[in-house]
Amino acid sequence: MKILYTNAHLGNGGGHATYIVNLAASFNKEHDVYIATPSSSRLYALASNVSNVTCLPTTFSSRFFTMLAETRRLYKLLRDVEFDVVHVNGSSDHKQAILACAFLPTPPKIVWTKHNTMPVSSIGHRLRANVGTAGVIGVCDKVSELLHRSSYQKLAIKTIRLGVHLERFAPVLEPEWRSARQRFLGDIGNEVLVLGSVGGTDLDKGWLVLARAISQLPKTSQKRLRLLVAGDPPAPAVRAEVDSLGLQDIVIFPGLVSDPASVLAASDIGFVFSFHEAGSYAACESLAMGLPTLVSNAGGLPELVRNEVDGWVLPAGDVQAVQSWLQALLDNGYPLAMKKAARERAQDLFSMSLLAQSTMDFYTEVCAQ
Image 1: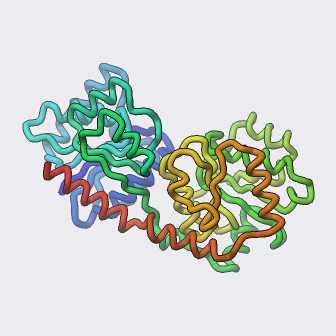
Image 2: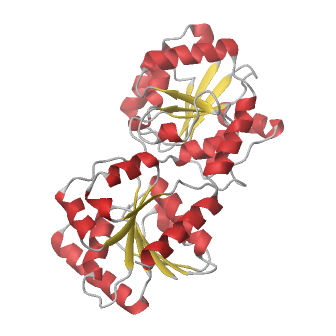
Image 3: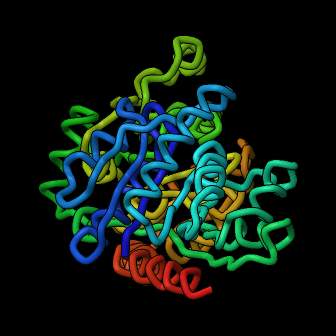
């Protein structure tokens, strides 16, 4: 099978980049895999290091005349290579793929993965649902339910959860745990509870809710906590708010790290407390590391964690609920069985092999239409 992945993000790309690279690396031995994405993107840098994958520097502009030129180039690529599947991951690349395919005598099947819980009721979505799109993947049931209530309902729709490398994201032994804590947090005692996230520092990720909850705890309780938040360095105004809460020594920003597993290795509990989220690589990776994981009840997050089995689900944005949870955690701890349950949850739902097999089965289904 000849597969083209497209993604329009110019910079980091977040989960989109991880998602596409994971699929490309799963299929590159048995299939012809191409990736079209801006040369400045994280996806391009990552994919360039994957063997047997052809990376094509491509932009997907929303400006009319620029878009026409880009669509013409995409049309020539589709015509010359004769792809079976074009797997799009956003609105602009989805739109251009449909336009380019419209002029082909035998167009490839267009599959779109919806990575968020944003509405799909616009005119653009109605057009894309009715012209050119063969199937849609939702990264969680919440997203798939949204699609089933939209113009996409007549298409093939399938929930395929994110996949993580279970060998890379795996529980660590005590020496590695101590080393990671020393690296990111310096000399802290074993009694200090570290809550870690590799979901990023955007305020939508909800980490500031945890910081505000910590600030309302007694000082003796605050000293027993650290919040480790990896991602782009936050804006000065955000840092100023953390400082105003008196948490400059408690909330730690290690920046963008090349190995997210190292941040989680330093943590006792993972968290993704977003206001908006569909599937979450950060939550899946945290569970895979054997970390009981706190999530909010937003979007698809409650599908990932079983409350008080392998983590906790609390109301998004609820500072008081988080404060009470933190104090109870410091007072009583949590059952060690939650660590084992977290790892098993990841093995059951978020393996790379499951992601790859489910996605290839879906390609086969839409190609047979």
